Image 1 (tube, rainbow, N blue to C red):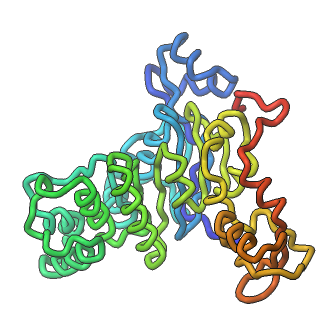
Image 2 (image 1 turned 135 degrees about the horizontal axis):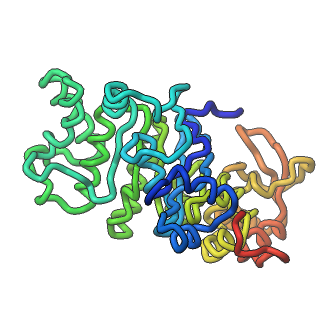
Image 3 (image 1 turned 180 degrees about the horizontal axis):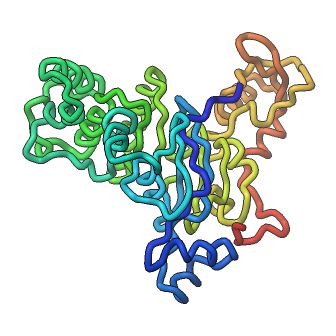
Length: 349
């Protein structure tokens, strides 16, 4: 079943420098980011970006520093104005909104969680969480009740009267997440939200987000430079390089079929057994005997089942029904580090 599109980013360009609109022709004619800077002193931040973001899912945008991912997310709520393009949310172009419409969009439709928390240092935790509700002019008692609900949900009960400086980094980011969720916005924009955290705390925050998303079904645009994080939480991933989308797809598609050498280099060191699922390599035309393995099980767990049973093939199931089969040889081949494909270059267009 195809999900409806909540946010459609269409032909989006962003160029910093003199006469950015005039620079678009050079970009469309094939000038590189480096050449544009050297010849014209302009910086190409986004290059004809097109991404359809499904409703009620997690869309990850990833890339190295300078790839344009943070610039991109700031276009969705117009913290940055584009050089050209469209961002359509529920059929309305955000880039064509009036100041009043944009203010209401930011208040009610799109909340943001920042990398460096962006908490108000002289406000208590409960006041930080209720800030968006106050801006919405929600009555004080209702705002307090809703804020407490989200403080409880992110595991900060008892810290309501503390100040941000009294909390750890992970706890501060929980405050930022609670603040974003308190406004009941349909879209959650998360710009490297967990990258400033220590690895264990980061994993914990990923668990919190996934747990909440399982219940809330928000439309989440999540920015990260970390592939493991992208593969763990993303239902769909778009990889940027020099402002251009080099590949879009599910984690399975990207790991199994990297578009070019840039993506291949990105994925070469990941634990493929913990990312790839049985459904990505199963044979739906053959039903075989053997232990039953659910289609969404990761290969690492599936391999343990086959090893314990001492067999070389298994039946793949969905909802208790057999839908195909999978063989040990195909599973071990899938988790091996991929080799660069013949003719695969470092170019991305």
